[in-house]
Amino acid sequence: AQSVAQPEDQVNVAEGNPLTVKCTYSVSGNPYLFWYVQYPNRGLQFLLKYITGDNLVKGSYGFEAEFNKSQTSFHLKKPSALVSDSALYFCAVRGRRRDNYGQNFVFGPGTRLSVLP
Amino acid sequence: SAVISQKPSRDICQRGTSLTIQCQVDSQVTMMFWYRQQPGQSLTLIATANQGSEATYESGFVIDKFPISRPNLTFSTLTVSNLSPEDSSIYLCSVEETGVGEQYFGPGTRLTVT
Image (cartoon, rainbow over the protein chains, first blue to last red):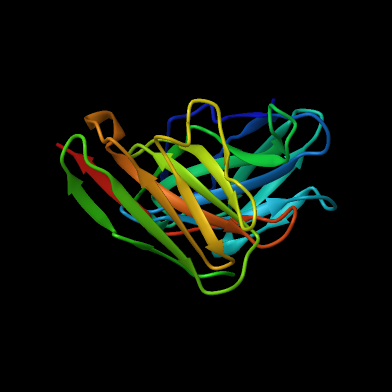
């Protein structure tokens, strides 16, 4: 069965500095990987995805993510952090259900990003 | 991307009662999902609701407790039955527009059981 790990509960970064939010995954077959952001008291917003192709994926709000198959990682990055980027970030993988009936999403535990002014 | 609305946005319910949550999408979608999320924590998939078939429940979730309806391609309901304080959570619906695409989420329903 697929799984997602986000090794850091909390990431703190100064405004203007680059940020990285880490994600590693385990899935059988080709990985379909996603990043979502959740602002306080709001639903999840889709940021970007990797399905196939270029290992560097660009998404919304200046975010990008790098797929690394050998390290089974899909880290989220941004060259210059904004205070408004402060939120909860979730990595997700799409994979086959345990009962092999279709596919579903599995979300990581989330990483809280705080960008300090 | 699809625009998703949920009703109610929040509710406070008494133990032993039920709450039905509605999810409306502005376009026709095949796949809809229901999740549960404790504030500040990860999402747990409750079930997949595809139009024209019975909902598929994940391990630990049963139809008697979480009955789901999917009458058409733009609407679904999730009922949380026989409420207990442990059911206090945020319930989210989502849709997937393509076979291997991303999911889009509604704003969530915050349920508090007293």
